Image (cartoon, rainbow, N blue to C red):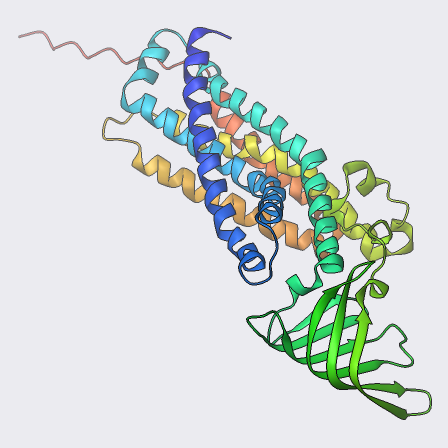
Length: 374
């Protein structure tokens, strides 16, 4: 790598890192506000909050990094043009490919990082996040209970609480137990509280009744009680028995899932997720070529590159919109999956043809000689 390439790459890399970190931090802080309530109102530790926040970072980085590369290439090359450094480099004999080489190196590095996120870090983080969320629902059921809303603790248990007192006591309890679909149970109590048990949390209910409906006979049985204990541990499956979502699976598990043959819908979801993981790293080159084509093609303009920058931003916006639309279409129709690759590679192909179709600079026209005096 020559000195000029290292010089431009160093500037681009620093800008890309700063933009990616800043945008990721902004999105992370915004999204993490949803987790603050678990600490303030429901008693989860700060360590659990930060761990959950860290597990969401790979998804944000995957979204932000191509945009960071795009902004870095635009900013760096616009600065080089404004300070006439590009003119000097061309005068020194640097070709279009030589000028674009630092941005392409930055894109290659971004593609490798994005592929590592897609192949390992993203599914690992999603898997850890879902497992921890499952454990919170199992061991810290009181933390996920929201006042005035029906909270689904498991597929068989829904809890409603009217209000939470300052001392931790809950009033207006309604519990819907559907472990036995033929005989669902509804429990209503004036107040209650979550108490620790040997195997997990329990609900201690005070002054209420237990209603069980036999759907076969239509008979309703009602039992009034002063105290009633509901063991929550019996409502949950083991974490390893939980079906892994597509976002939690590694690439081999997406392409060669043993359980995909049982459900065409699951097979389609896994196939779409796998191809999206492969397409996302290519967007690093797509965004980079959009910026390079806008700034390096055409003649030098001393009045600035504002129009070209706005054009690059507009094209990048259209590209991102098309990408999101095609992803939604692929989720509904697997036949649209090849369009994901077409959309990702189209800016690279078109940009490459415009940038490198004629790497030689056109010679300047000689001024016309004055006509001889008569």
